[in-house]
Image 1 (cartoon, rainbow, N blue to C red):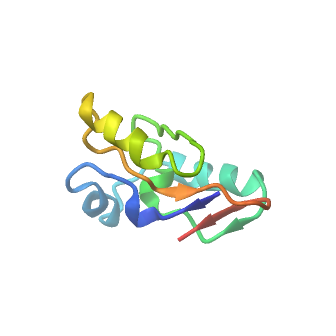
Image 2: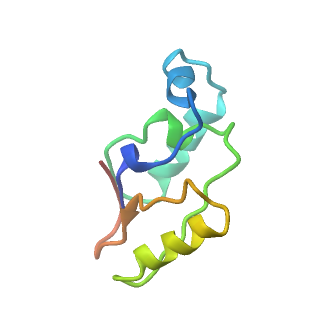
Length: 96
């Protein structure tokens, strides 16, 4: 998977709060877990590994269907739905 960390929607001021190091011990544990899953290129920014979020939701669709899915999600009440990456052949996780 290739994830564009800058494309991940966040609550207002979430990144500012994390930059001020308002963290839990769980963010370090989450990083270690991510590393245990296989090759990891790039370190997940704090927003992606902070356990205080409500948890992530990823949906994979066939190439060419992304825009249709995003339009539908936004129309039914998920205004922050976004394309944050892609699945590419190969092992591991690459973070941009």
